[in-house]
Length: 60
Image (cartoon, rainbow, N blue to C red; front, side):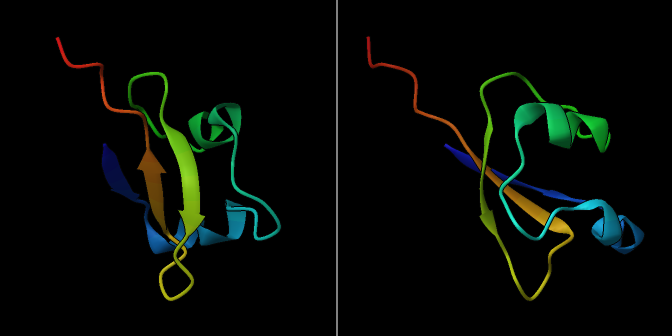
């Protein structure tokens, strides 16, 4: 499962360029979503767009 979060462009200065953010880091930026999402990619052309993924739930 994948999703993206669009932050205001002014927030770009608070997004680290050296590493992908931990859950604690992106929550400090004000991102609110359920637990288990992983920041997996920095989208260079638009760094204010955060890309997240998490494993699909097991099939029942």
